[in-house]
Image 1: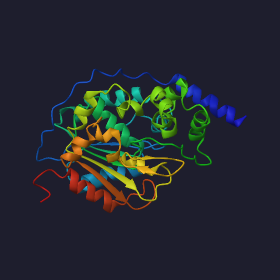
Image 2: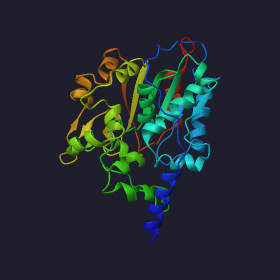
Image 3: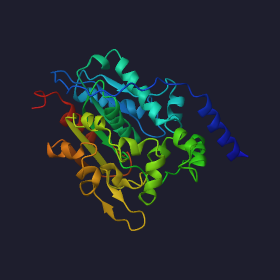
Image 4: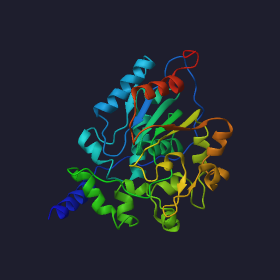
Length: 318
């Protein structure tokens, strides 16, 4: 009975979700214009979190401490924190990202900035990359991702014992990953990628196959927008047990049967430059960073170092 109730609640939430603003046509943006003031910072949180979370707010405080005057914007899909958390499990990513694109473009401070810096925690990292690829207005100067699933996941994470929203999502996910309903409604399913089911993935993936430019048609706008980044920095957690495979944080592909890892530079997505990652790398704008600990185990010291190295205006950090 409980499982049935969870499923019904999940479906009810999906069916009553508010509509979002349609995505605008893709137009390449100009390169960022540097100023002596710190650029605004956009932060997108991960699965099961919400934009009002205390830990997330402390990150904004650290950004302000290192670069006084930093305006921080926390991405949200609903003003109600509980609904914003639910939207990390349920929703159509194409529409969610379109909503974020519209919200940022209309924001009175962000819309007038020459550029913004961006940090994506866990799934928020690949979502911010999708923002860069699909709209990028205002443009992102430096994109930093922590434990993100850039090459997808091949296993869904476990839920806490009393996390009924997570359990409701899991009930729909298992055994139905590639159904149209799940691909349009369950967020983690939309970046699920099993190399052993590659053709099924390419045919049915609602999100990841598109933003990774893996299908036969390559969206040149995605590449042109991504190569405008001043820096794309990807952090991988050394003991990450939540993201499977953890190497996805560096765009690596891992064979689930043999455990063999194919690194980004050995994959067609890099060698044929589908997204512009090779171009960024050749201009020393692509960085692979390893940090100790499990998923999202971040220290103030690490974050302060990131803010100082990548977000301090030129001339002020010398």
